[in-house]
Amino acid sequence: MAVRSILRMGDPRLLARSLPVEQFGTVALHALIEDLFDTMHAHDGAGIAAPQIGVQLQVVIFGFERNLRYPEAPPVPETVLINPTIEVLGERLEDGYEGCLSVPGMRGLVPRYHAIRYSGYTPEGNRFERTADGFHARVVQHECDHLAGVLYPKRIRDLARFGFIEELSAS
Ligand code: NI
Image (cartoon, rainbow, N blue to C red; front, side):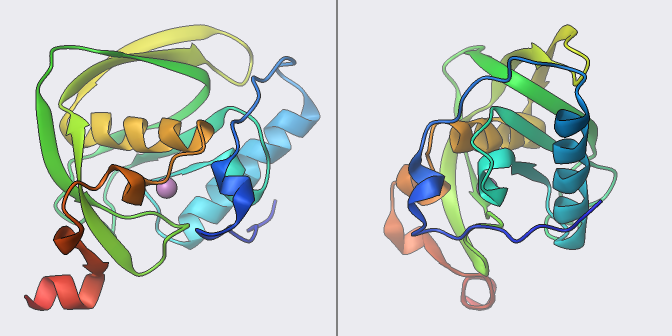
């Protein structure tokens, strides 16, 4: 439908908590999801959350076969996840560099839980759950953080590991 403009860090709308979707299968919900996919694909994103395009609803999408922004990442199933919840499986944390379409040009080293179980709803309102680990689990945690108004720089423990992509990869 349309590539939407992406809010960038500093916009207070990125710090708000999103609201649960109450009506499934609607034209408006399908249009939102289509816009999210168009916007994510236009920027080679691994995922995107509705608040990043200014829609304060608990809708995230993610997934790719191969991703230009994360060439080392294994495939992640293409997923629409609505009203998600995450359960941590084990306490193991893993550091990894991540970026965000709302923080363009930058990367930071962020600890995330290695393994999770996540659940939520499809656009038609069917509940599903999945377990995930590694990069897949990282993407889900990153996107769900957006729904709580959390951007990844807030989770960086060592700001020496936060910077512009070119500078980080040159060092
Ligand atoms: Ni993001």
